[in-house]
Image 1 (cartoon, rainbow, N blue to C red):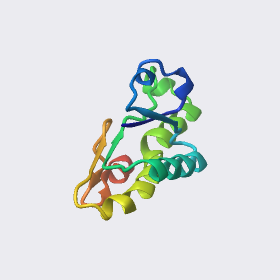
Image 2: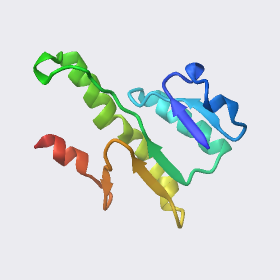
Image 3: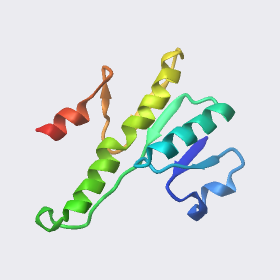
Image 4: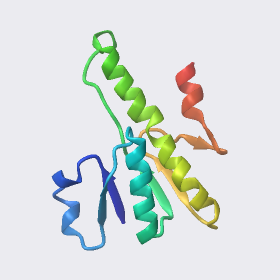
Length: 120
């Protein structure tokens, strides 16, 4: 299993498993996405993409700063698309593969419904 996270140096549970490989990945950093995906694909076969990346805010809407709203959009809406773009060409060559986005299932018939819903 491949696990990615913003701060792998802080991880304490997954590091105890021999079959879990941890890589740094911040979905708001396109250069890190490219580097991590390339490194993972050189060493491992990927059949499942499970996204749990997210940015939450503990405040009322009217109290949110513009910076916090932008960070939320960059992580929750825009962040995973570059990951999908890197992995999907690999998946398309496979007979079976799975993509699951924990916070919102975003791919349906190859079209990201998040864009539509967020534009409403």
